[in-house]
Image (cartoon, rainbow, N blue to C red; front, side):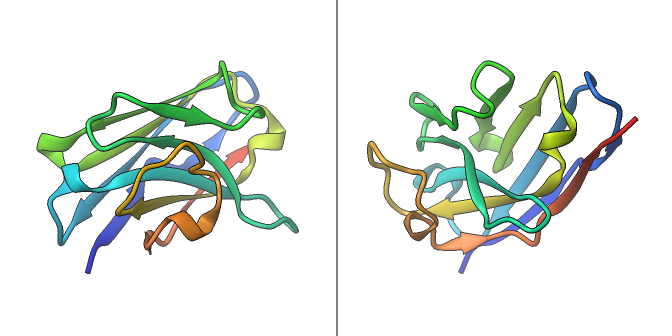
Length: 125
């Protein structure tokens, strides 16, 4: 069983930056493909970014490409989501997710086996 705990959410203004963290436990962290998802108010959960086991491969949704970055530190069992140039449309609960496999398609939620509880990010002036 894998436990994931997100942190770093909060209230920021448009144009600000924020860095989310997700710490994993219960399994060797470098054996997990990691992803970030978000759920905006009234919307379904959607893919944001994913990173492969060693960090060599990354995918981003078109909405965040060029503004967000994903990274991981396997020694610290942590995956990060650096969010820059935040906009009100980025307001959402952000979830960390872990899966056992990596493929060329990591956007579907079914690719992930474990989920964190989420952290709220609110972008408002």
